Length: 240
Image (cartoon, rainbow, N blue to C red; front, side):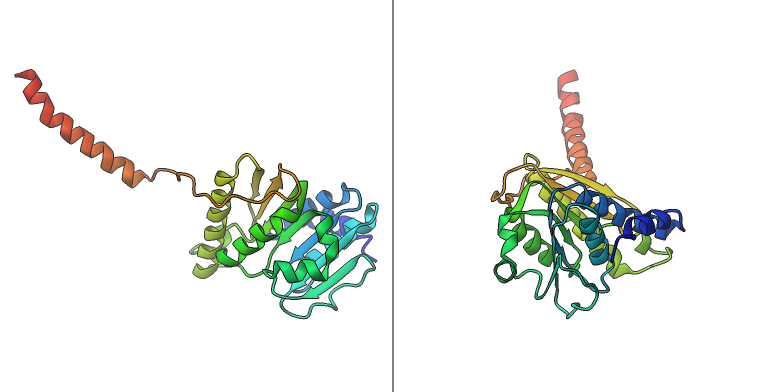
């Protein structure tokens, strides 16, 4: 039913700028799934089903597997496949989702987070499902590029711009706090796509320990001025 998804996405990457990047992001996830043996894929946020059908196409092309999709709305009609389970739920209800789809306990290969774009909600999803991710499993995050929504751009929207930037900053912090457990990369263009790969074993949790953050230029210049001022006071006494 979805056997033409790869061809359609590959053709779409030759379209206009936004279509090119958007299709490339879907294609990257397609390739990630199709190369895995009997993958378990968890999709948080279904809506119209474009990513759902992409994932099912990859599962169909490969050696099979299972896709579990979650949405707060009833999206059970966006796709049809024996490899697909739809659960209407709050995507941050980890316990309820795992209970309804026990296959997730065996380990998740690919997790796609595209639900409520609020950093607190994304944190609940990421920290909640991370222990169920296999070693080498991958988490994709949509809507992490603020560029298209900045002032004067085609999709100019201050709320989306700030929201996307906040989530991306959060992912940077998660990586910095768990650098020994993760690989991290970002694809820009369209709404962006971030990729976290788990280096640790199934069952391992993310650390929420706040490591020292990057120094701000404001703090640097304030410290520099203070040092120069002190040196300025010391030099006359040394010279005398």
